Amino acid sequence: VLEADGLTKHFPVGRRGGRVVHAVDDVTLTLRRGRVTALVGESGSGKSTVARLLAQLYPRTGGDIRLHGESVTVRRGRRFRAYARRVQMIFQDPFASLNPTHTIRYHLTRALRIHGNAGEGRAGLEQALTELLGKVSLTPAERYLDKYPHELSGGQRQRVAIARALAADPEALLADEPVSMLDVSIRLGVLNLLAELKERLHLAVLYITHDIASARYFADDTLVMYAGRMVEGGDSESVTQHPAHPYTRLLIASAPDPDRILGEVLPEELNDEDTGEPPSLIAPPSGCRFHPRCPAAMERCHDELPPRFDVPDSGTGHWAACWLYAEPAAGKEGDAA
Ligand code: SF4
Ligand code: MG
Image (cartoon, rainbow, N blue to C red; front, side):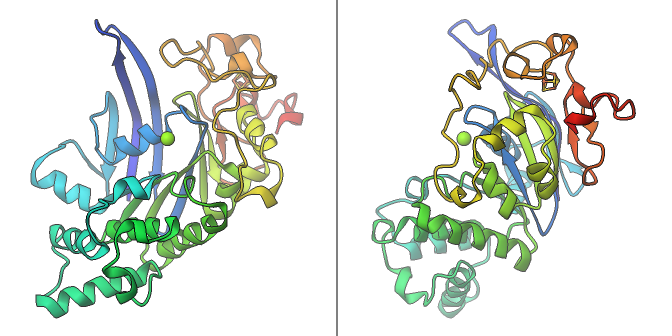
């Protein structure tokens, strides 16, 4: 459905400009119908920026975005509205994304009308509202429609936010940390709902998270970002069970226990002595951006940017941007595979 190719975003900083934050560099990804793709990384790795670029919320510095193979360039007018309808975003904080002075009925009716899905007359609208809440398992609809956001639980609010996105009848959902603000006990329900929607509505879902353990359970494909760049990708099973990139291994080592999946599996930032600080994106490290923290760093890692290499003996399409995989046939790096 949706592809990004070489997506790049540099934000100017400081009064005089001149310096830039390399928030996202050369990110390439594909979202497919009926699949959840997880984009995993620490806070500040650029994953939210990728989602906002894909949603066209701000202009990109470079690269291409394609919807069904067609480049998406405009950020206003009729063509942009058509794009925005097909690619919907869900945010981290459902409370902030719903207006507290309006009922659920108001929010959903408005979204249905904007997207021309409000049906015929009063009965048509009621039916559309009931169907929408049914899709997110808030039933019976009458119990929720006339409530205000503060009268619902966090999980119910996130379901309303998802319903509002579905009012557009989208093809892709971009979910930025959709459960990280929710109580641990209700995260599973919301993630299961997203997984169910991808099946039933054939949606392409981008699931952004700092929790790689949850990617293992809810995503078909997993992509890992570090310091604005994509460092590893492939099917979730392969990436999470046989991580190839030293950074991904570090992430998984920080979240070893699958039972903690719905708890605080990863601190917002991995800044203990073992891992060091994530680098500044104003002056990102040369070569492989992970080299200052990498236990396997070699000479060339300091100044040569590693391209994507296939990970040998792994799932199809599993790749890592790491020099350890430069010579898969040589075998000398065998213990790393
Ligand atoms: Fe470590 Fe080098 Fe691989 Fe980067 S390219 S992750 S520094 S081994
Ligand atoms: Mg974020």
